[in-house]
Image 1: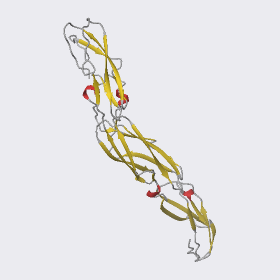
Image 2: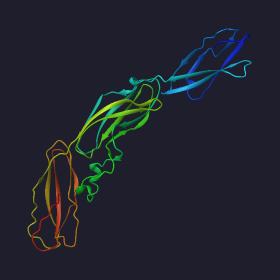
Image 3: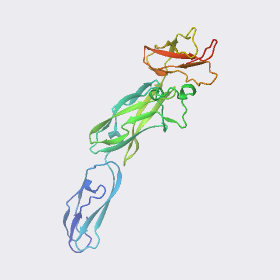
Image 4: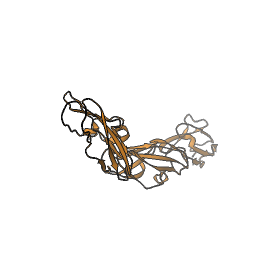
Length: 296
């Protein structure tokens, strides 16, 4: 502070709580400047939030109609290298089922951080999981495949956003549910409120595979059947792979001239790795003669 007048200038700092003013301290906060005198003011700054901001501080001078104003432009002392993951890559082996892995987002700074997570190039329409699909055996996706009107959102994070306390951490569960056979190489980005977008990132390398399931026997013989009397036989779905698989009987569109009706109390389901699922099939012959139909 400089007193350019010819008389003494008593001054007093006017405290403020606006915006981030409470993060600043001034010493001394009051005093008297002699004519032509200079007073050095020490400013202490302790950031409680991250971001760029501009703050105005006022000093009241006795006898002056307007205060002396000091404007401070600053960036909160939270830098990119202060926020990060404890791993550099997250690898998923996804087989069309929701598959999750956990990573940890750390905040070694002295201020709480409000974050949001997103995955680069991910879509917006929710992906369809196998667990959702097997709840409806008549879903058209069993015969026509899954139709998406927009790119699917195949990655989810829990939590997707939140606040990490000073020198704290947040465990993040990353789940991939892919609807296509493909390989992924994406980045999970961290947006920091008040500071910027993509201040930290984690590479996600993933692949989606579909296991090869075998059926035994290939033909179910029902021999002689009476008209409109139910008969049951069973076949096996064998999964010799290390991955879970999903099966579903083709939904039957019954017409007036359909010769054989078929159904199953287990029309769709999941076959775990290195296991066998036993599937019952019930038929009812509607007309005389020899008939055959495909159920898978």
